Length: 100
Image (cartoon, rainbow, N blue to C red):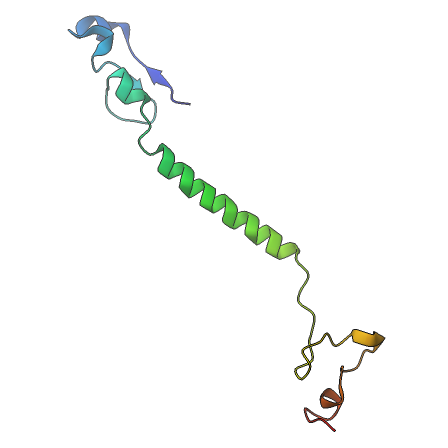
């Protein structure tokens, strides 16, 4: 929400009155007309940058909570822990990479 200020002396001294460059938006260094002071030229661009950053942070949080991928047999491409065994899933893993 923009905050604009002015001084009564500026309004009375300016020939255009309140329509002149007598308004100052906080955060900006120059005096402006009221429509210029209320304008937000970087609004959409800034919103898009903030949206991308928020999505990136959300993806990082989700990735941190995902469990690591399970080890897979190089030969059959199945999970090593299948069939309740804690050894390799096929003879190739027991035979040093060769199938018997």
